[in-house]
Amino acid sequence: MKLSIAIAVLMLVFAAHTEAEETEKTIEEHFTNFGNQMKELSDDLTVKTKDIVEKIGDSEFVTKTRTWFTEQLDKMKAKIDETFPKQ
Image 1 (cartoon, rainbow, N blue to C red):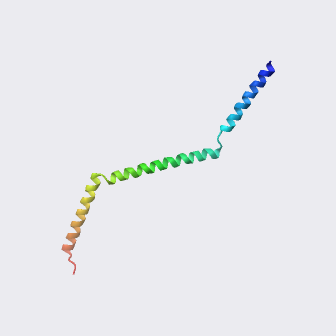
Image 2 (tube, helix red, strand yellow):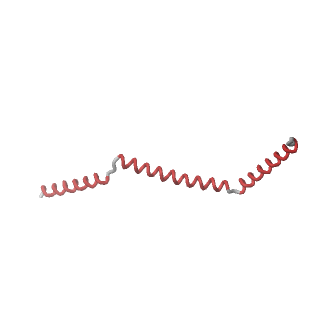
Image 3 (tube, rainbow, N blue to C red):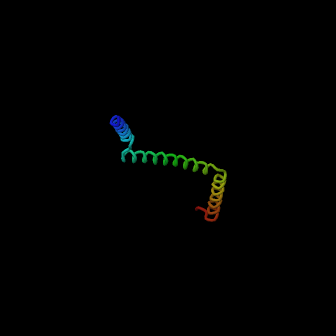
């Protein structure tokens, strides 16, 4: 009876060890998985950054500031043309 229990325990240990070997990842799989996670993270970060830049570019403050600078530049050009007329 002790022999049959020992054999049963050995079979269980062997089965558990075999399953553990099958699910254990290699170093290559770990690096591949890590690379995929970093790619997903960078893609997500890229999309979020683009969205933020678009929102900032479309904001009222930026639009008004851009308009103000354009007006000031046009005024400076007019003043320069008035001061130094083309001949």
